[in-house]
Amino acid sequence: MAHPYHHALSSAKKWGGTAEDFLSLHSWFDESKLITADFRHRALRHHAEGIFMAERFFGHVMTISTGRVVPVRLIGEQHVREDLGFIPGFADWIKAIRPEPWMGRAMALHRLLDPFEVDAA
Image (tube, rainbow, N blue to C red; front, top):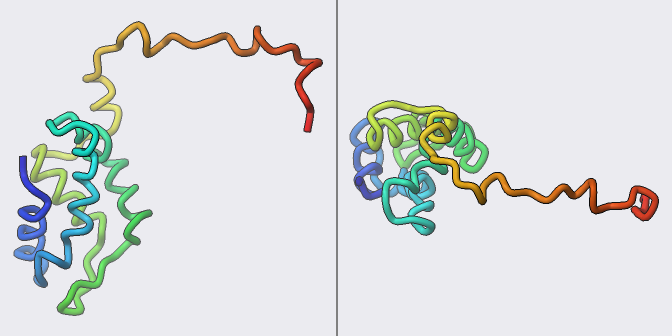
């Protein structure tokens, strides 16, 4: 499992600048290690939708220390490819999750609420 710094070094080699120019973005992809410190953390951001989410957090482009403008999406794609070898969709991760009974257990809330008691505010 690559450390964000190593991904950042790879980005600097590819687009110029320094590892520090890219470290915050690569760290964002791997922040989910706070939840689970094994490969499963990647299910949260290591997919096509996660790459587009990175654009919402970091903007469409980053200006690195050399003045070069680099698309955030390309950096995100690099990160995911380095970790997985390809860019999956979120659906690819979901298909790999084994359903457990508790995951589908939900209250029939509509049966518990009297529509005449609910404030229509």
